[in-house]
Structures are given as structure tokens and as C-alpha cells.
Image (cartoon, rainbow, N blue to C red; front, side, top):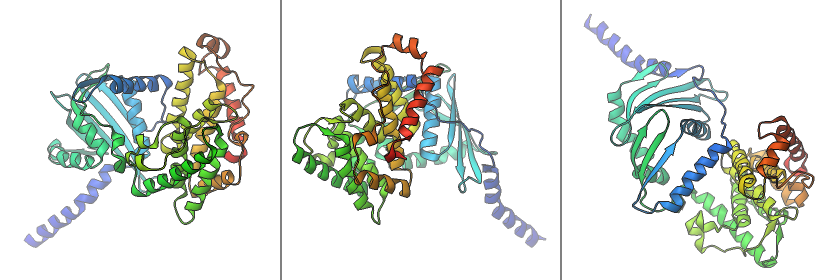
Length: 415
């Protein structure tokens, strides 16, 4: 009798992990939503960054107020960016409810990891009040025991550790999330080794060296974007033989983008301060330097981040121009869309990345990168833009954007 009970107990213990796994995994996601980032949300994020950059000094206390929709959109963006999942955040008085769905077990996924958590406000950092993984409730005592280990694991990343060390308090209400932090100085980008792996730094060095050499030959005279990109992508193609075409393209795009914007590479990667530096010059796309900047900035965002974010940043730039600058310009948006498509293709996989390399390396003109734009409306003040196109959700605006998309799709290099 005792033997049977003993064997039964052993069997139950062996089945317990399997039962927990079956309870934790589910066949459908509880959260499934697209990434949508509006220009207004990008504007508010930019305002937060600018406030920190210009007003908060090392050792000072900073305060960030995040609206409920912004917190929700940011959580969903991060879930898609890092886990190909979806997330939702609901703010309440003194608490935050988080829902996260992550696909697992193959592509298409055979199951989903659905996580629900509630964080409650304390005098300092939030405390986890409840956690559920699928249909499996996780005892809070177990979470409390392993939370320090999780934080130490997250802290291995220099950027995450810097953010965690800066946090002082998080206050929660239905109307906003208030984050209090004490900034100790420095920038996440100063930790160059944590941002770029050794192989990526080597790729950037090769791209930077080639760009510096070619820029010295041409001197400070203006250069065309196609003339700058052609040798950079040719180098990427040569180095991709038996290597990583996507990574080589990313390096070429980043180095070219910073050059077009007039930003030294060492501001992103400190060790590049000792590398060869290109001669400063104006780079134009179809005769205009603003189009080159729009194209390359959008290409870099698409190559390194989510394309929904790239589109939102490009649209935000045009709305800002309409309010206080040169006005809303559809030709700038055409450059944004062409650049985004270029960046997407550059990192879409080994075959598309290699195809783009060889097409550009074989020789391109600016008109191969930029669609026809001279007949597109530009420099529209906000009242004129709204009168003619009705806003960014109106049929007239959508029709103009559809026309731009068709022109971009017809570009030979980007097919």
C-alpha cells in the first residue's frame, strides 16, 4: 500500500510541471491589436525628451507625466517590437493593470503566453499585487521571492540598469502615470558596447572609413545621396559574402544617415571618436538637402525600429512644419515613405537585403530613390492644409497618400 502511494506521489510530482505548462499556455491571445502611434503621441514623447535634455541636470529630480493612451500605446509598441506580441495598459487610482500576449512555439504560433498583472502604488516603486499566466495564478509570495533575481537579470543591460537606478517613485491615477526620477548624468548611448555588438562596431568602422575616404576626394562640395549610398551599399555587398547582409545594410544606413544629418558617429558610438571622420558637406536628394534628410532618417528608423514609429515621426515632422515652420509638404512625406520602404527592404531578409545591395551598387540616380515630387503640394500652412485636405484622416489626404504610395512602389530599386 505504501509503495503504491509513494509511486502515485512521484507520478503527481512528475506531472505537475506539465500541468502548469498546460495551464500557462493558451491557444488564442487575450490581447491582439495593431501598433498605432499617432503624431500627437510622438509630439508628447518629444516634449518629454526635450524637457529632460534641456532642464534636468545630473543629480536633479525630474518628473514625467504620461497620459493613459500614451502608456497603453507605448506598452503595445514595446510588446510588438521585442516579442512580436500585443499589450494593453489600464490606469486606475493607485494601480495599473497590464495585459500581455506573446506568441510561442513556432510560426505561425501554436500557443500564446497570456500574462495579466496588477501593480499597486507604494511610497517608492510599484509592488506586484497579482500575477496570472494563462489560467495559472502565480502566488505573490513566489513572485516576491524571485523579483530581485529578475531585476538583477534585467540590470545586465546598461540602458535598463541606468533607468532602474534613476527611478524614485511611480504614482498612478486614472488620468495619468507620474514617474519621478533622479538623473545621475550620462546617456544610454555612452554605453557603446551595450548598444552595438563587437561585430556591429566592426561593420560601422568599415563603413565610416570608406565614407571618410570618399568624402575627402570630393571635398566640401555638395554630394548627391545616390552618389553617397552607392559605394556604401557596394561595400555592404562585398562584406555580405558569407556574412550577414541585413547587419551590413544597417551599418551602411546608419553611417550614411548620420553623415546626411551632420551628426558625428561618436555621438552614438563613443569609441568612434578615434575613427576616420568624413568631410562635412551638404548631401542632396534630387537637388534638395531636406529630401535627403527625410529619406535617410526614415530609412534608419525603419531599419532599426518599427515602421509604424517611422511613419508617425515623419508625419509629426510635417505637422510641426505646418504649425510653425515651412508648412505641410507632401514632397517631404514622399521622401519619408521612400526612405521607409528602402529601410524595410534593407532588413527584410537575406534575399531582399542582397537584392537591394546589388541594385544600388550597380549604379543609381537620385530619381531611382525619390519618386516624382515636383507636382506635390508643399509649404501649406495648417489652415490651408485643413481647408484643402481636411486633416490627416480625410478622404482628400488619403487619396494624396495613396498616390504617393503608388509612386514609391514604382521605383525600380525598391521593387
